[in-house]
Image 1 (cartoon, helix red, strand yellow):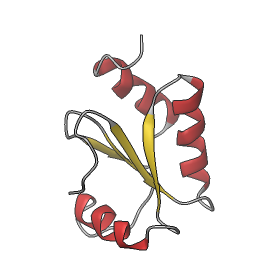
Image 2 (cartoon, helix red, strand yellow):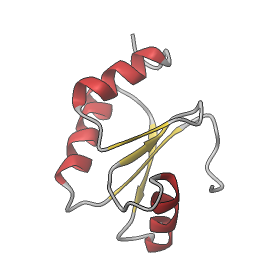
Image 3 (cartoon, helix red, strand yellow):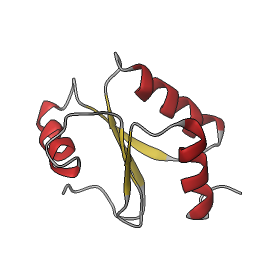
Length: 89
């Protein structure tokens, strides 16, 4: 997929995307460390997004250390996933 470590959270998004800003805020509020890949600055990463989403270009896409991912997650779903993985308490 990429050269990003498998032990970290990676978020693919764009600054114009409201859902991306919301997910960044949730992660930040919870003190979660993650790598943000801005698709405007790294347009080739859009291919990764399309691959993960089975052809869709929807963002944000958040990839977790266990290899799972969420696309356009709601706040509560994102928080629940972080709890499930033991990333937050």
